Length: 324
Image 1 (cartoon, rainbow, N blue to C red):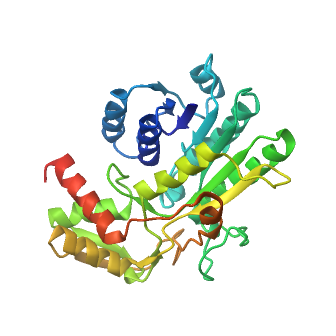
Image 2 (cartoon, rainbow, N blue to C red):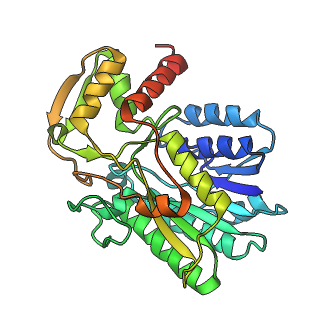
Image 3 (tube, helix red, strand yellow):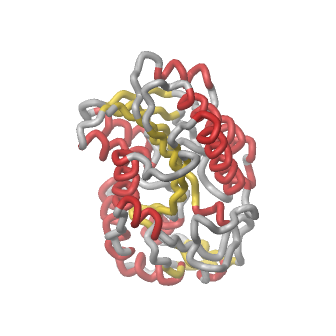
């Protein structure tokens, strides 16, 4: 298979590309290498992928249709894993235009690309658990109403799902949206709590704990995420739908309190955190918890990595990568 991976220099895109290349697939990676977090980390990921047989990288912005078309010109793309997006809930309060460009225009461009790709068999795309907004009825089901987002990031991800359904209906493009739940692990994102907490605890700096640690998160280890996405990409859609568009939760199905998460991290690092307790941040939600019945039934997805194991692997990677 020849698979287009957008956001290939990003956290999940990097791991997805590695997994697909290990299977023997050809991977065309696209990324615009923006500076939302240090670009050097993205370049370090790409340096690892560059040594893999079958990998081609094109620096391009998915919001630029001409650049996107040029990136795939002459390539017989059979599958797409569309992960490129402007990430982050809190940053959407500061720079909303970045989300409109990447998550709305960029996603629409990817749908147009899929519409005109004659060899395309299936496109998976990244949605987010944030679409569930501030719901308190747990766990979250794909059939729950998701029309009350509490951040612009969440609103753009829900808009992506709606645009995808429309394109699947109009043009019969097989599309699968994946609502990711708090993905973490080696080569992760510096803006995520597990990374910043690790960095600050090691340095003896103060960590900021929102809502006094009284939040639930369905932390999902990167290897489990990749296993699920690879299953969906390689298997294709499960039949029986009037419109070839499906949405799945993909999470650990085992939420952890933020306070417990910090305690596990402290034990893993061997050092207590210095804490600053603050109220809930605008745009944050009190809990995330994935019901994974649908993806388990359709694709046999079953997360295997508990939080203590996953954090231990991340901390080991972090110490080695930054020599601390």
